[in-house]
Each structure stands twice: as C-alpha cells, then as structure tokens.
Image (tube, helix red, strand yellow):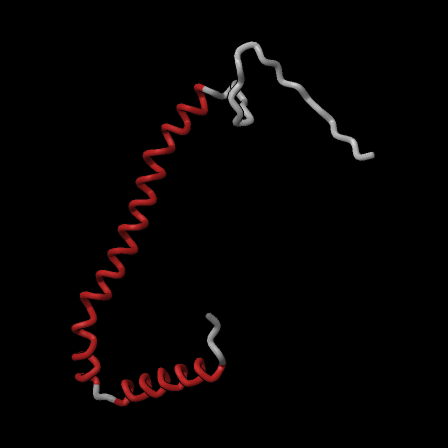
Length: 97
C-alpha cells in the first residue's frame, strides 16, 4: 500500500516536532524517559544476538554433514530424476525448422 507524500510529510513533521520538544526537556527528564526504555533496548539487542548465534550454530552443525556427504557421493552426479535399473542416458538435440 503506497503512502502519499502528504501522509509522509505529516508524519515527518510530527516526528521532528516531537524530537525538538524532547530535546527542549531538561536532562533529568530525558534520563527519566530513557530509564524505562533500557530493558526494551536490551531485549532487542539480545534477540538480534540470539538470531546470529542460531545461524552460526546451524552452519557449524550442517557443514560437517555436507562435507561427509560430498565425499561419499562425489563421483555420482545426478540430474535429480530417478533411474530405472538397466536404463541408459540419452542425449537429444532439438532443432528449430
């Protein structure tokens, strides 16, 4: 759903005025607003870290299995179709008339 320019400009103006109003607050008030935000910020950072660790774990666990299977089946190339016993591979060339 596209956003028209008027909606974008209104949102940007509201954000700018909110930020400007926040910067006009005294330092103790900004710190008082920041303190309740710390647990949420930490949870976001930890969830990103856990995601990265889970991806690395996935790679670490699958790499040896891939290497083993690659060594076991290195000489066998397949195009993904099952072969019947006794069948032969046939090459074909299609020519346009």
